[in-house]
Image 1 (cartoon, rainbow, N blue to C red):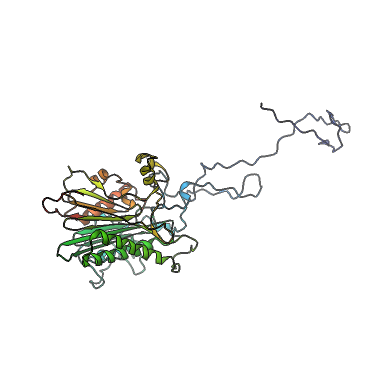
Image 2 (image 1 turned 180 degrees about the vertical axis):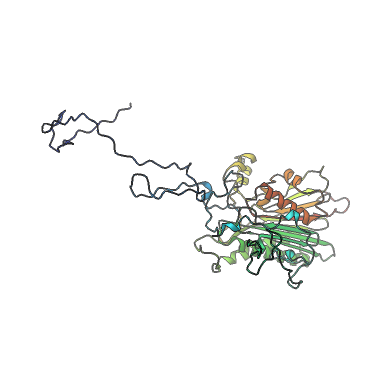
Length: 456
């Protein structure tokens, strides 16, 4: 049973310090009333862990507990403060202020963050000589190249009037301009891709590669590779660039040799893995100061479209979707994530809604990198029975259009005829939804297969 706490017997008078006998009610020397209960000493309150403001909220953080103890108060930790293996850096479905969380790679000039490249949906169509077409790193083939015409004077994206100086600042309003990789667009034949930094990240850690070629029998083939750097790893932007370039080059060469597209896709993913692994042995670049972090890493997804065959390959949680031109036909998701949520659903432990509502949903279980588990490239081939488009994207897009039906609604009806415009629209869809992560999407039109071909 419960007991009230008992007061310990005093050995000395609290007034005159004379010795006392057990049972004394008054001090024999000064007459002090020993029944008086002294006031308890001042306690040090415990700071709440859930109500503490986050750094950057305009609050001066206490350096010591009240009461002058000199001990440092523990800072409140939020889930977004902890590094994870989420390829976007943090779950995007949580309602969180922009300043929440800790990013050790955040630069010292936050005023640069809000300035974005022009809205991709309002950009002028890119032609073969458009400098933006050459911005995508590692593209194996395409109309734009280093031998094109010199870039005209750049106009400020903020005031739309001032000239941009060589130091990257507007001479009129003084705004810093977006870096080249902040927003990239490219076309290669009938396939197009757009990549954007998004509204929360300080840099774009995605990369892509496009290509179009002819197979040995003369039939056309197009390809797209999309890679998403793992933000919790070292140099994720370098990892995605190396992977996309290696995969694109390998895939294009294999197709031209007559290798079956599914075999070529497997070879491309292996080559991408080797390229990322090689980064682990290189010195940290001048812009990084965290050699203790894990090896560079990224996810990868790719697609090859021929006259009658559609092949996809992936490692990680970047995805490919099928959207038919006839919207009365069902769309489909062509890939399965290497993620915690997908494992829970596959094992029958959770429903898909429950798994993706969990804070661990976006933790990936497969990636390219020296510290990855044994590489298991996933490939699949399909024979669509009608024309459509293949959407290849990072989770920066599919977090705002997760199901095949949602992606179908976001894709413009004329996507097969205007792939670059459609890619811009899809990036805009993600930015309108919050733009929490880098966004990269490639659109590959699929031609009608020969008569009588069935679906696989």
